[in-house]
Length: 168
Image (cartoon, rainbow, N blue to C red; front, side, top):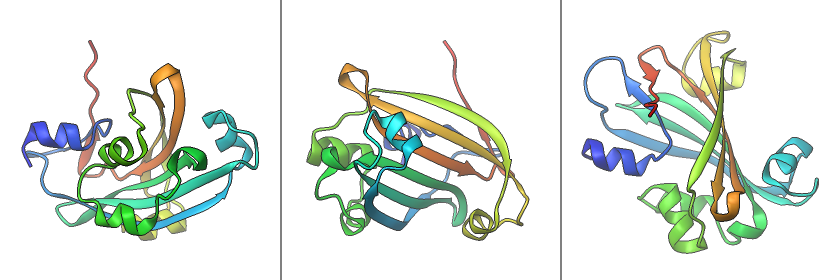
C-alpha cells in the first residue's frame, strides 16, 4: 500500500518505523465477544453499566513482527451482527467496515498516552520480555453529534517505532 493508502487504512494510527518507510502490516484477531460493559467502559461510551458491548482484541504486526496489541470496546447496539469471522474476512480497514455495514463513521478521536511495563499476557502477545517498556494509547473515537462509539486501549512496542503526531 502507498503511504496515502496506509494513512486512510489506519486513520488514527500514528506509529512509524525508526528507519525506512512503513512496511507491510498484518492484523490478527484474537477475540471478539459480546459482554456486559464494565463500569469504566460504559462511562467512556456513554452507556449504562451492564449494557451490551462488543470487545475485540487484535495484534497488528509490521513486517511480520507484532507491534500493537489493541483492546477495542464498541457499543453492542450499534454493532449488531459484528463477529470475529466478519472482522477476519474483511480485508479493508475496520473503520470502513463500520461505515459500510453499520452506518458508523468515526470523525475524531481523543487520546491519552503513557509509558507502561508489559505484563505477562501482553509481553507474550507482543513477543517482548515481561516488564519491557510499552506505550499505552487510550483512544476514544467519536461519530457525528460528538457521540463516543469506540474505546480503544492499545499497547505499542516502540523499540523499533515511534509515535508521530503532526500538530497544526
